[in-house]
Image (cartoon, rainbow, N blue to C red; front, side, top):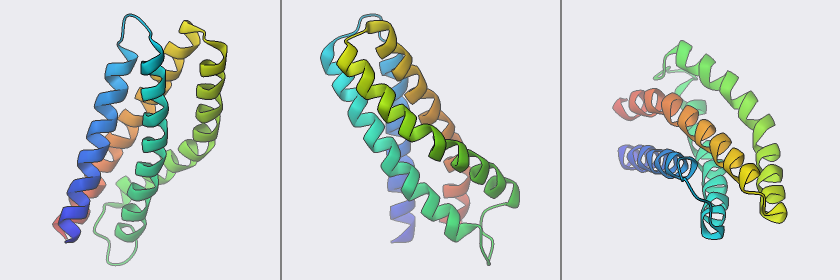
Length: 131
């Protein structure tokens, strides 16, 4: 059962990273894309919470996730917790301003956070799932 949850979290992260990277690569901007970006922002926050829970369990005794991966995720977690509320505010401002350049900037930030979370989570989720 634990392996299934780990795989679901990994697949969700991969999907978020894929959607975010596709959104940031769009040549033209349309309102549905901004709406989809908002959904991606929300999903990114939810996945961070899930991945953080796995790291919390895997980084304490018995250690199933390497100390290096735990330290990297801890550092990322601090940055994510600071950046996420700002990202939500930036997304709302981009939506309200109807500014295509600002909207593209938001999708680039989302893509960066999603990719970073996916990379860090891959090692931790894999290690924890093998336990």
